[in-house]
Image (tube, rainbow, N blue to C red):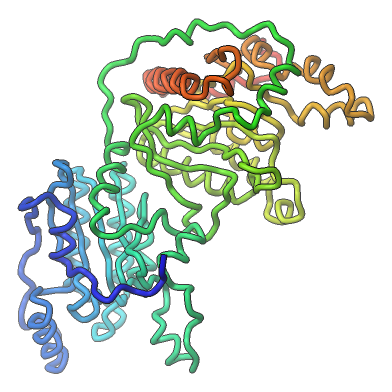
Length: 503
């Protein structure tokens, strides 16, 4: 996709018309006082010309409407009004809209396009970014979705406040997005800003935003996100047949070989065959993304959740889970906790990245912080042992209120060959080590770590869709079940599953 900005961009009203259901928009804006309090004659003339040019009375429009029939609050910048800059009247309008959306428990969609703080108003306008950010924080703390659509251009104080706080953030193709506007950079430093940096596409590549979406597709993205974020499942599903499955009597090494089959269904196929309303998210939102982890919103049956899990490498030598993966995972954990959604983690790894870069990136510390967060997360949680479960990379996603395991999944401190090399100084006794270490599902059930087994008939690789559908039904049931458990002792119960000597 080209990083060149498109020739024409939608006005605030055009974006509202493109995103909201026809005729559903209702403005929340009261009139801006004229003359503007404290404005100089020259500034008042600029405001007059801005009103005439844009057809708007300020640089933002706020209100509510319907997106696919669902009531949503909106805040949209009008860039043709003094470059969408934020002065005191605009800031008051934004803050009032956020507070009203919070009071009425509405999800909020923000569509900034702004050069930042209005220079004509100086420091008081600059300080208003704090007030706006405080309102966004209160909205998020109320467990309400805050979605952002970054438009061309969004820079300065807007990008550094309410433009960068979305639970889900997408951007207009080719949009210029950044902290310092390129014209200001060139004026300050006497040279142009490096090309291709402040583009929506580059921000996506760096894991700073979740997607690049044209305006005509925005309503669909918002609807899919809110379908998950606001889902209210009604009844507890009936226990599926897998709830009574007992683990097979096969040996551990046979399961390990089965789990390594490259045709075995992975997380991508589980979502494709077993979930709906899947909306992939991208990166940490802080300049990192790692192909070793997948983060998404999804529903299994009627049950919504935040999904995070290992992405099995497609080819030998492809990236495996590194420290950035776990920082992205922590973004998912925070989303689940803030929005009150269940968390689903999916484990399928031959081991974390073992490299200089991973060590210097703090892999061990990231595993520790992931464990710390999962043990203490307030949201209901379910983990799935889908296939391989080797080492700290697997353990980092394991703690949960309930754990489901595929019949031939396994969990071990090292791949059995590594354990054999340590104990016997040869890899040849890996099958013996696997059995002795209790890595297979039967042993994990006996220890109380695994609560639900999904059978393979006889190997998930030979029945990809059917296996994924069975696993999805088990996930739906366990998500519903753990949501119904008493929350008061959730953390004690969860931690107790892993206590040495409990079984």
